[in-house]
Image 1 (cartoon, rainbow, N blue to C red):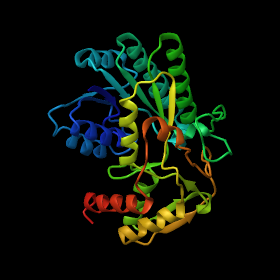
Image 2 (cartoon, rainbow, N blue to C red; image 1 turned 45 degrees about the vertical axis):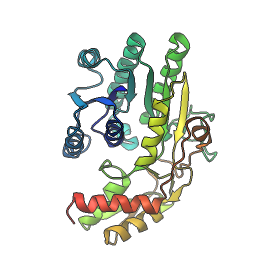
Image 3 (cartoon, rainbow, N blue to C red; image 1 turned 45 degrees about the horizontal axis):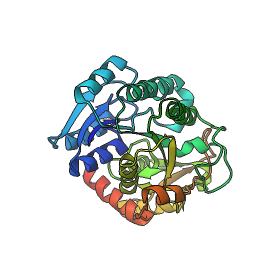
Image 4 (cartoon, one colour; image 1 turned 120 degrees about the vertical axis):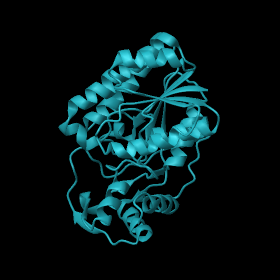
Length: 317
């Protein structure tokens, strides 16, 4: 495969790129390496990817259609994996234009190139946040997603609707993947596990929202990459899948495991629920299991241990 992979310097993009390269694919990474979080983390991921001869990289914004189009034409991908986006539910409330530019304008640029050049498959990142105010658990792909509670979620719903429209009009294969609380080595510093580890290392309090009464479908990165790889190998029109673990854990359990593996007792600042957040996320993964053979294997205790080992080495603890 020749794969154009946007967001290659990101957490999921890095792990997916590395796996695809190890399996013999040729990957063109595209990323703007913005400062939403420390760019040094992104550069450390790219350093690993650049050790592969079949990896090349273009730095650019998704909304810069000239740079994106030029990169596409020079590389001529036969598959497109679109993982780049402005991330963060809470950040979207304060910085809406960052999401409009990247997640709406940038996405439109990508899917228009898909329409023009007709690669074999187009797989893109959606999010569990699309379920918004839904109360029925677990979340399944046939549930209504017309009640978002953040602009980030709204942008992902817009991506899914655009893909569906283009599938209906132009028979473009597209698969949207709704990720659930992904974690693991090289994760984003703004995500709970990395953020908590950093604060604990500095002997600072960690923010625990809804007084710790939170349930999350923590999904280890290797399981997510397996699901992405399966979707990439199976072109479908107007398809959407949940990629989670399907077996949720409560937030306090994750904190206890992190304490054990870092050997640091967390100081906790118990806080109310934040705007744009939800109390529980649980994925119904039966559709992905049936159609993609998706079968997550990593329990939270194992995954946190792997994250903890990486973090201790990363920070030289």
